[in-house]
Length: 627
Ligand code: ADP
Image 1 (cartoon, rainbow, N blue to C red):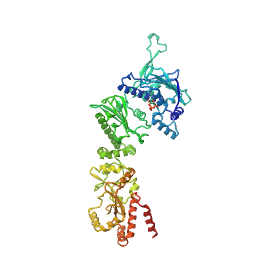
Image 2 (image 1 turned 90 degrees about the vertical axis):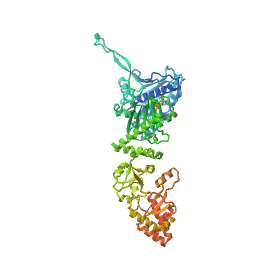
Image 3 (image 1 turned 60 degrees about the horizontal axis):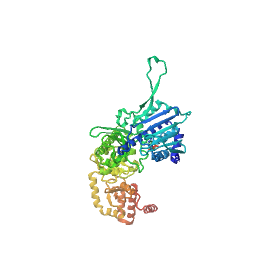
Image 4 (image 1 turned 30 degrees about the horizontal axis):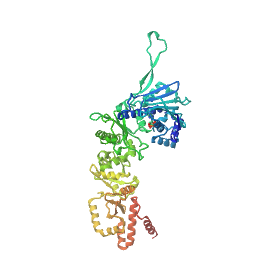
């Protein structure tokens, strides 16, 4: 029975685009179809390992051209498709990638952008060169074959058909040549061979084409037309790219492999070959995308590397191969030392996987360290997109990874106005500087406004500017770098003034005990009031004590955790405001109360924190002005 079905809307849109595409790289259709064929063989082989009813076969992909009928066929002996699978897989776009692709292209309104094919539009790319496509297929799970046929406009048909062996045969009926486009070239032997070599060389199954061979001539027949016959030849080298040495692989080959496999439209930032032989033998090929891939920020995004054993595909995202903080890394691992029918549960416990994962992590960090050393610009671009992941990695699990990660962190330096490592910060430290100083703020300008900066600046000390939410948590876990403690200019004892001065302030504190207490009493919500050791010109500031800073308070609040930083109101004993306030305290308690609260609210504002009662604050100010 012949059934006619309509394409789903999305599929139709994609098809329209393929058909009307003025895209110049139409040739990628062959790569896409071969890649599907290879996946189908992978699937069949994998099933045959656990299901004895499914026979293995001499796997191959056959690419044939028929000049007379203007057709190209791609035949594989993979899993094949049931009728339902035909409908689900070829009648609908299954992959979210294709949807994203459509959205991206339609938004740009440029259907010829260079991203066709990079999103795994796969099967539909056939319509770039063909006006009719048939798919004859027999699934290893069914005993009947089916024929799918479509002219790529509105609908397709599916009917029962005859086919001896399992697998799929796709026939493309090539379009007629136009002024701009030569479709006939795909019927040429050398053209097909070139395309296979160029795009599909690493496919692990033989891709065969017919090749014209010249018959040897008899001596007495020298002048006659040469006789020819056809022979089937394997075109691809079949050695997976990751089994090769890095030196044998051209950049173009590697980049194409990456883009095709991981659906990126840009070359990767870097690629890493890992080749280990010994007790445990494996290869890994890892990539860092130049920019996070389109699904990186989606909740459903899963980390993981592809897993192969002995060249057979096992799992798309083996999460045990990569730590969370390196979730942006793409790639694959192929090991000869894992059983073929390994299950997800077994993987987690598998010692070999753990060992490989540890080494993969080490290699990635070594590569990052190499880039940091040799190509600063590239590293900074990397860090802009992925730095926060490394910071989380450092913070995670109480700093378990801090030794490996601390030298890969770069933070903005106040003095240098650029990103520096902790090591670079240390190298520039003037003599006598005991600590590493940091401030929280989105930019140099914001930090510059903090009254607490004055003293640090006056000493010529550099300050690291922390602007990511995770930064301060990371610093707390680090505690120190090469023995130099991290000090927050908003929080810690900066140890910046000399001992005599410090002692003087301590003595004064005793003396002014009652007054300081009165200030504390006057301000609701303040935890302590002290004489400041960090101010030069400013009259006062607020700092925090305890382990929670203002920044952490803000971050935790976003996570709905109401944890308050302990506020300390610091008064500059050398400022005339101090004297004035003390004077007021002695003569007009009411006025003293008001002024104290204005000063406190103002100090909070400088930290970017709204006073608890802005209305009251504003009323005070109004009254003050009208006075
Ligand atoms: P993708 O391969 O990116 O998933 P395609 O549009 O190329 O997208 O193919 C859709 C689905 O159709 C595949 O995922 C696969 O399940 C099925 N398919 C395509 N070609 C074949 C084939 N030669 N043999 C078996 N199944 C196939």
